[in-house]
Length: 285
Image (cartoon, rainbow, N blue to C red; front, side):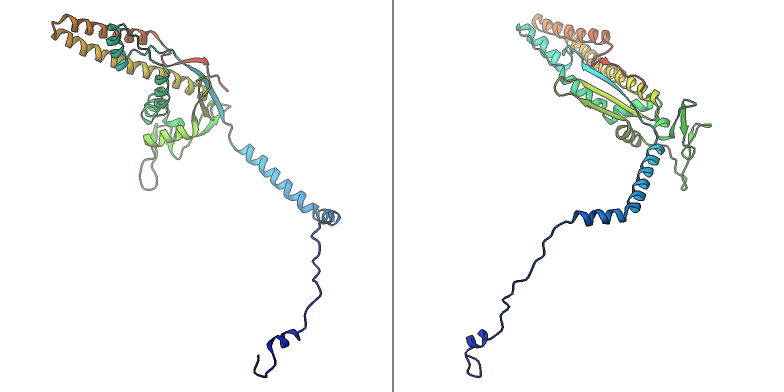
């Protein structure tokens, strides 16, 4: 009870109660009012649409044309007799066992080498692609030649300019490889049939096709040279060991291994498309 002696419940019951329910309006969309509102602002809507459409067309026309050339490659039938596989195959043949090797391993290695920093650095330097990659602003369709970036490269002297601090603007190997991989090169594989597609994009359609051909030729040559060098080194080592032994059984083993490595050298030198066979060559886009 309160101080006045009146029960608290009685005082509470005497307070006025709000027994009227509040009216909550319906959240309905009046299509007629919506249409009237849009019609009143039709000129603003039309103006904005025209401006954005014109801006999109202007941006598309301002951007340079990009051309893409692609070559479809199939894994070549590898002999699989080089390196350790060849030596094991030679030893196993003495016991009447034929060890076959899947050429897909060589294809996987070739794909990784194709996108490696060392291979691309050598590729760019060997074909003099430094200036087209980093010293140009585009391609002239009329003159069929590169448009040089005169702020970075002087085509008259063949030298790279310097910045405000006197540092040469000549790109490093890291810059060249990053630009080539991020902007120009794309290598993809069809998981279902193992076909590999090598694509090159460029502002110059002739360069896109030419660079694609060079990549395919160079990766085949690189892998062939590597296997031949390994096989010849193995032959030299085995020949030295053969001269050191007089045991007939060991001599037979060495002869088998030398034969296997010699076969690798002969087959590699006879195959122009050593790792990848061209199914559909690149054309000028």
